[in-house]
Each structure stands twice: as C-alpha cells, then as structure tokens.
Image (cartoon, rainbow, N blue to C red; front, side):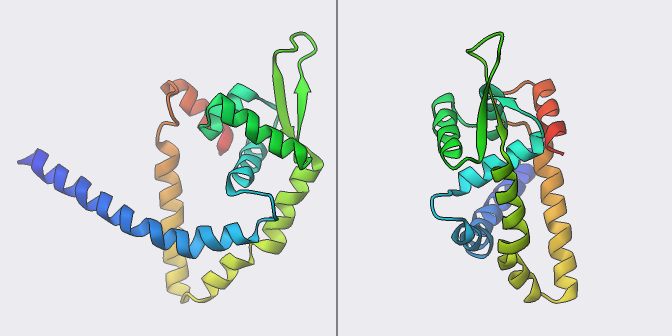
Length: 169
C-alpha cells in the first residue's frame, strides 16, 4: 500500500512539473533569451555563469562536469566563447594537453552588464505580483535551489558531486 501511495505522489509531482515547465518557459526563459546579445545562446550564458561561480580557471574536463556537457560539445562551446572574447584558454606549461579556461574581463563585464541593465524583464514580472506573491515567489525559488543543488550532477561520485556543488555556492 505504501509503495502505491508513493507512486501516486511521484506521478502527481511529475504532472505538476510538466505543467510548470511551459509556464516557466513563457514567463522566465523566453524573455531572458530575448535579452541576450545576438550570437549569445542561453547555453553560452549558463557557461559564463558556471565559470564565474567556479571563480578560477577550470580544465575542459572540469568545465564539462560542471555543465554536464560531453567533451565534443565542451570544445564547441569554448570555441564560441573564445570567439566572443568571453573566455581565454590557458595552456599548462608542463603539459600542453591540459587546457584551462577562465573568464576574461569582457566575459565578466558581459555578465555584470546583463545583470544590471538587461535583467529588467524579471523586474517587470515581479512588479506584477503583490508583495505577498513576491515573497512566496522568492521562497519558492530558494526552495527549488536548495533541493536541486542537493541532487547529484551527472555521473560523478558523491564526493565529486559535493566538490562541484561546493564550488557553485
């Protein structure tokens, strides 16, 4: 009986999540994507944020783990970020096969500018909410962040996952 109740609960959560995703896309993701500069994809922006959160140069492998991208996709993403001068490659002087990437000043400025100038779409959204709804929304975001940040990231061991998450906090 307990397993049946748990299955019902999981199904209900799945249905709620699948109903929630289009609303999130319409109210959050779509307006956000429209604000990105031409040629900057959502994945590029996420990659910049990940590098900022890491706070230091990351190897291509580490970056792939943080972003959950396969190696080939990491290379393409880094190439696009380098073309925009958002990141730079740093070659290890003792082993040329080791390549680290880090945000450039241009990448940092892009993120800062986006936050201060372009994230107004969120301000417009929040201004449509009552103060009570705004507080509920803030708490919901915090709760989602707490829960999702506790989940494993891809195929990593628990220790690797915890190290990655610690860097992202």
